[in-house]
Amino acid sequence: MGWLRSRLEDVRRLKRRAGGDAFSLTMEDGSRKSFSRDDFFENFYRNSERLRALYRGDKVPPPHPFGKALGEATSLPPELERIKQDQERLDAQIG
Image (cartoon, rainbow, N blue to C red):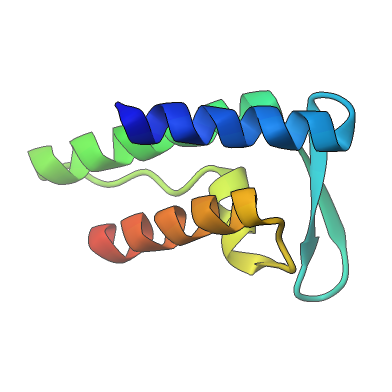
């Protein structure tokens, strides 16, 4: 559970940096997508659902829009860069 606490601290740090619950990601094409703290948690829950479906042999749901956007984002702060790496590792495992 230590990694979850670490990620929650990353969200708190991002919230302080952004001045609220919302933050935006810059995409490879230069556009920006905005997300909230709730999107972060929904992405976590969706990833849990995806892993359960994989384990049961069911159809794996698609990633949450936040998880998908992380893969397309550029120049992330260190907190989000670690989350992006975790998301990419999970997506590679799910295949």
